[in-house]
Length: 76
Image (tube, rainbow, N blue to C red):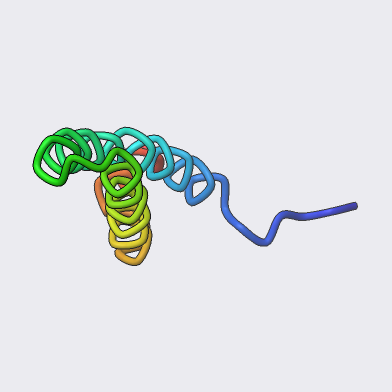
């Protein structure tokens, strides 16, 4: 008989957080890349800055943990 250590509500809240992270990351990458490529004239540099922006954005969101509103909503 196996019991989950992580409560179901926490798992659901984490899934919501992943969806939020996945949608917010491109919203920061697109403007960075769109501005960097014409400004620098270098497509590779623009894409590189976009990737760095995506990683930074995702890590900042992940570092905050599971948002309280998702935990509260999963408990209902």
